[in-house]
Length: 268
Length: 259
Image 1 (cartoon, rainbow over the protein chains, first blue to last red):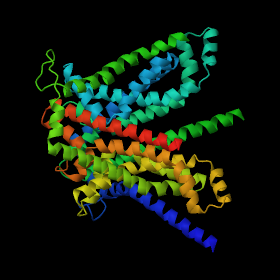
Image 2: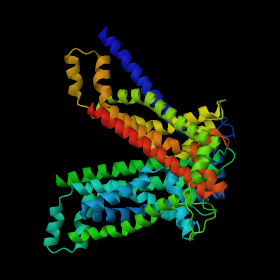
Image 3: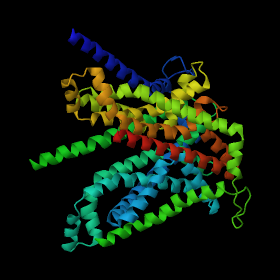
Image 4: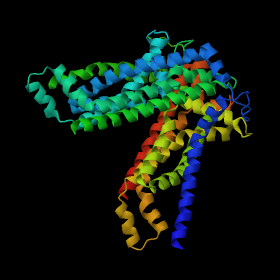
């Protein structure tokens, strides 16, 4: 009796979780399915076709939005990863008061609603007579990406044994060598995950870009937001992006695993 | 070793220009009158009093808070059982479920909301219902993961002890699991309620143009009306509400832990 009751409960919990997953994946399944739809219908799948993909590659503004999104995300990721890592290493060696203060300010863009960060940056650019452009967009992205890199790298730095870098210096390494050969290799995974978060934050951003980009510069989010009518080509675009994002996530998760296996083999 | 701390100087300069200065700009704009030249500041509180005296603005504020509150409530009601059930799975399946829940978080929120727009065009819901569906969809995974983390951190011996002392499953849940998962619920609330208050994409895409929340109001005053002073004041009021509610939830958490 008791056993039967338990399986019934199990069945209930599993169905509940299945429903949750269905809810979470519903828009994704919908987008992928309807990106191959022959007609413009939103409710009926009338037949397989690739025409929305063709439409997408003919839509210049859509392609341009992909270009700007990738360009800004790559620049923002590279710059914020370098600046953030250097800043985190510097902060880990500075006085406690300064570190706490800087980290508090560093947290502001993370905690603040995006729209507050966005209008603040917009007001700043306009006050210093900087016309909103691709440059202001990139500067804004770097600004909100660095905090995530620091938040990712800082905890790893705290775990580091100071004596190792100290030993490198005692053995005649310059501070620069100690940094490149000793500190960076030890915090490398944290830098990588910080860069990944920065890239995804920049790639997906809408609000801050919306307020800080110049006229005619649209990223994917801004393009989708500004569309007045429902356009099925967006389904094709979404499907492509989802495939790329999934591939990147698989790569990022699989490479360390393969490398680990490889080094283990070498050790044997 | 000591020379390393200089490496933080460029970033300190960066945050002074790009994080601190913008906050000061918002404050300055909110406290001054439109058309003030930079050299002759005239401080005024009229932007704030204008907001508080106009019933339309207050109504928008109340609607935003109500929607954020109901969204948070739904996320807890739907998300708590999910987190609890996930924690009851074998370990490998737990990791799998958490992975499946986090995967869609990497996909652009606007594209997911746009997909919902397509799905919901098939239904004859009111705009507010559509906004709720979009909001709960967007924030639910955060709530589930926060609660699941706090439940899975629990010492399983505590539950065994409760059973040994004669408590049944329900009583064990109410007296042991639920109180210990409160920190998870609270960090879930901060991850759901705060962004929900300021959200303006979901109401615009799913609720249609006539559906205005506080975020939309800020957008209108900055980009359409061009009244940055009033827009800054609205965003300061919103930020203040968010800070106060964050402080209140933290306080609640502390009291809970002391009790």
